[in-house]
Length: 403
Image 1 (cartoon, rainbow, N blue to C red):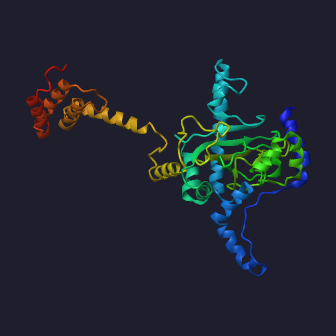
Image 2: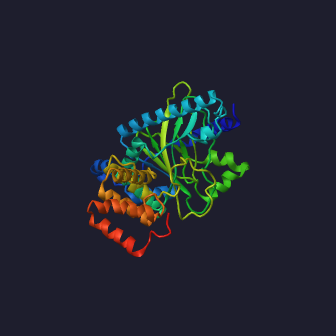
Image 3: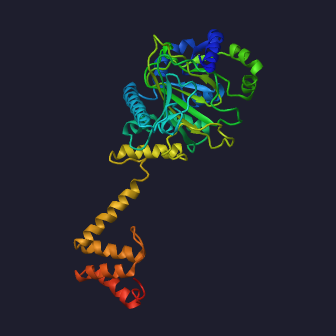
């Protein structure tokens, strides 16, 4: 057994007595009003300030209903299909001698990020461009409901936090328990906030994430980093497991201690978590790791920009708001169509083409000879604007000396 897996099992053995369940915080109410308030509380849930305060104090908070179970199920299916396609692509390259048999090479990294203890566990990178399914789910999470985004804005002090990770954590039966770890070394300000969203109900046998609240502090990191104190610290710390329902989430400070649980080989099941991390622009120290983000996703995309693009895509289904090359392709196609129309005798297209050559726009360099040639063709059809441009070229002698 891998040393890290052995370490994970050891920690599990002496942390068992201190495990509770991660619950969404609620308002304290008097017994007299308890029955009257319960239904209202269930419908509304805790307020944004309460959730943000819990996150600040505990380092982790549960958020119920971030995604509907139906949407979660649809996205889960797409993610598992993407994983299968990624494995097939890598396997095909291996057969052709171009792949990475050890799962650590360049081909593997096109689809997957590093994850602690890879056995039966993977970190699948997710695209934004060209993926309407992922865009639809993210629109529901961040735009249709402002629940999560408002907590992020409150906790990080604005909507200028940048998208640092977008991926799916998938564990299969037989995946070992990870050792407890923070995602980042301690620093004064929260470097990242990460949200794990369950895409199916998570049972104890599926290896739910274990969190140790209040370990995002300097004092907790000092004890954890001291090898002589680590076991005692973990044994004496109360931990919680995220037994999330489909569409529920855990939002946590990346400095908080946590670990993925063991997915039972016989009673477990495939567990899929959608996750996204946002970098705090007010935290100036190094993150300390490479974010799980596809290379074609702009690394400076803010929460504000992400929401704006998702809203634009939802408003116009023909639009892919994350296709940054779309504008260039549309411009190239417009230039091509204008050229074809000019050759077929369209006077307005000839005028436009002549103007492009005169100014050096529309994908062509300045060529006054060509400009005059197209102005002449348009002017011969009686187009007044072309006649004016042609007269200007003659009167100023711009054609002289050009080729």
